[in-house]
Image (cartoon, rainbow, N blue to C red; front, side, top):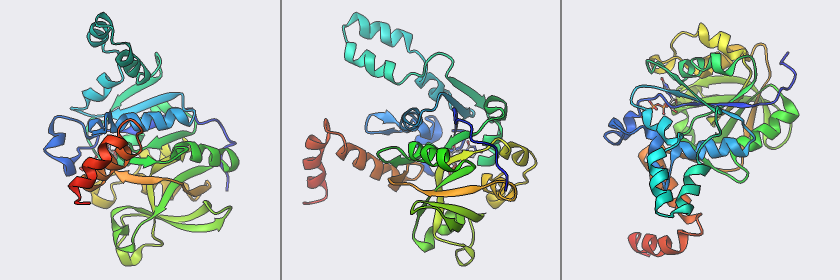
Length: 296
Ligand code: UTP
């Protein structure tokens, strides 16, 4: 197996061009990545996870109707001027903290939502010939340190391509990309011997699913360029990773943390409760409300 010598992962790609049909009508006008968990949009958690992991450049693959994401990471000039005039310095600091430095964010359009693999391919010119992180923002992962920081640590030891994985109940494997494991390096890191996107339950090689975080080598783009539609008629990233697996190492990393699928109503509601209970400024007031609601 050959894989490029380890080069620093400087860039992250956030594919945010999906239609979010599971969350209609909320996502008719508002991008699903802008739905809030407590008081921050889902996409901001993903950016903060990448910042914590040492990422320097943020690439957003957007689509029609996703302009609010660009605005969120821009300077809100009138708002900040008004806050300044009113002496609201704490609020100004909150806005400043959520803004990438000049030139650190790029936006590219996926004109048609042809699938995750296609969205990633749309970022090829901005990523260039270097390894990159890929984060699906609607898969919110609550972990300390964050999932991407854990993965970068693993990448610095092993190189290659890294895929975050977690175990799900066997009857759910047909909804996800599923990995087959080879050699184990430690309790969290294993080589990947095979992958399949949305397999039939009886064909799944394991109960370990791909959880929305990747570190990929740039050779993936050549495979994505010629990738034919796969499961669901979409251009699937997993299919191109399977092709690249013949040439390069892929590692499955069992991260420490809890996943909330914020593209799904139940996952999104659970995320709001979990993140609220984790906030020292909110939990003491929220817990009694929650207890009352659930009849404790
Ligand atoms: P999802 O499978 O969650 O699809 O995509 P979706 O369209 O966003 O949502 P539903 O299923 O209709 O409710 C996984 C990730 O890939 C992105 C999505 O934005 C999400 O972050 N994606 C998907 C794209 O950027 N482009 C696509 O063509 C498809």
